[in-house]
Image (tube, rainbow, N blue to C red; front, side):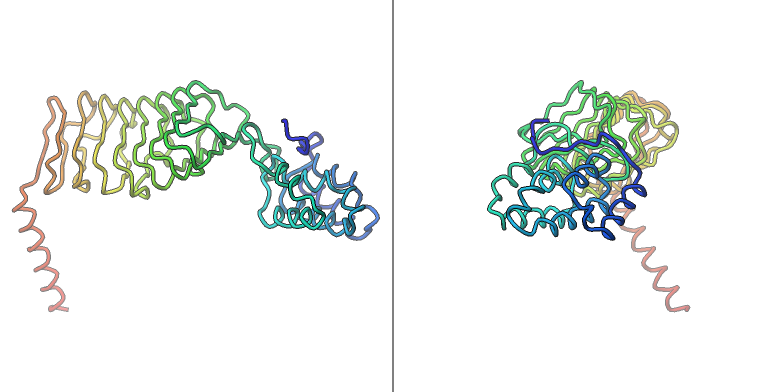
Length: 325
């Protein structure tokens, strides 16, 4: 860490033990010293404890001379640490009152590299700020990191061949990213997965051990292209994409169901199911004239007129049931 105000956890303690320390200080204000504050920073980043300690330190820094004594530990609360916004604002206000806002901004500034996560345990994230529009993370190993943090400049995120992905892989901090590739990765360690809200293209090609959240993408309404070529579906097909999906690549996918039902994706323009295993028939929706690449598969395209008549019949039945009731 190059941030001079960063305080790492060197003597981790349980939240209960740390909470006892701040409660004891409340009963005996003379215990609230810069050394006491630093000891807590070196023991935890548990938000309730850090909040109480911050309020105690701010209350103790009632003059410029007192602020000078507590300055380093107050700035340590925000330096390369995940901090509750309300607490960061209080520390900032205290610094501003003591004509030290410039130093606060330098201490609180994001920096590429490791930062301490808030929570019960000693865990770290990796900040990718300043990586530019095309974030190339190919072949990176993120062992020891539980979170990746991007910035708004990221447009394309390439995480192909990455090792040891975080358990909670949240890419949504890249608010403007439109393309994400996780191809050729092993996602067996990933339990939850979250993409940028406006992502348009996701690549899972040759990815192993996809978590359930990788199959449930229907909430990403801007998503147009999904590549799941050579993915092993293990005999079940629970994937859900937004109805606006335009391109779906399932080339060489394994263990798909015998009947691949895609009737809900009426805007599909390109479908590649060449070399899939398990599937014998693909069902497309009414009005779907998608370009299909396949070999020895039955592609069923319902007749548009039949589809309309079916809807009319269903409506008539509903009306009759309503009158009968």
